[in-house]
Length: 262
Ligand code: PGA
Image 1 (cartoon, protein in one colour):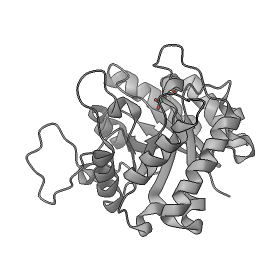
Image 2: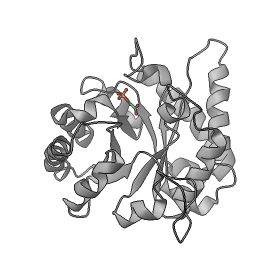
Image 3: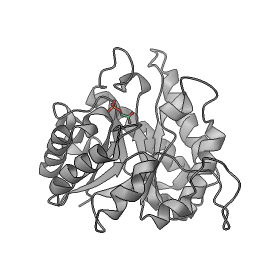
Image 4: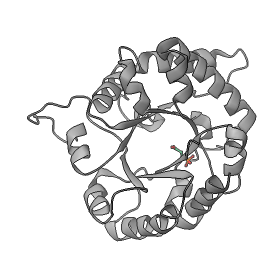
C-alpha cells in the first residue's frame, strides 16, 4: 500500500523561530503516530537548521520551498542561493519546485519553465525528492488550460533521465484555488481527479506506463480539514499540498488524521 503524502507549505511564515518550533513540535507528535501517511514540513530556509536539528530521522520529513538550479561541487558565487547539497547536508529530503508564487511573483520576473526544468534536474540528481507544482491560472471553457498544464509538465521534465523519476511527485495546484488569491475556493475533487488522469497521460508519454503509474499526484489549493477527505478518498489524489491550514497545527493534525484513516 502506498502512503498518502501530506505536505505543509509554510511559505514566508511563521514570523519567528519560537513559533516555527512550536508548530513543528505539535505536528511532530501527531505525525509520529501516522502509519499510512508521509508527512513533510517545508519551513522557510532560515528555520531549516534549527527545525531539522531538533528532530530524529523519519516523518515528519523536512522539505525546502526552493533550491538553486546549479549544484557546483565546490560551492559558488551565487549570492542568496541555497544548493541541493546544502539541503542534503541538513537532512532535507524534499523540495518544492515550480510553485505558482515563484512562477508569478507580485514584482519582477518569475521562474520560467526553463529555470524550473534546471532546478528539477539538479535536485533529482542530488538525490532530493521533488514536488513539482503545475496548474492553470484560469479554467476556460474551451479547455486550453489542459494544454497549458501539459506544456508545464513536458517542459519541466524535459531531458530528465527516467531513473530519477521515482523521486518525482506532482502537485496539481490550480492557481485560482490557492487561498492567498481573492475569492479562492478549492476545486471540486471530481474535476481535480479528471485533471490528474490527464496529467498521468502526459507522464505516460514521457516516462512509460510503469513509471507514470507510480508517480504520486497531489492536490493543493484551499485544503482544510473540511474538504481533505473528499480529495483523498478512493485514491482520487495521492496526497495534499497544504498552505494556510498547515500553519495551524490543530487543523493540519486533523488533516493528517483524516489521511491516516483512509
Ligand atoms: P493554500 O496554499 O492551502 O493556502 O491554498 C496551497 C499552496 O499554495 O501550496
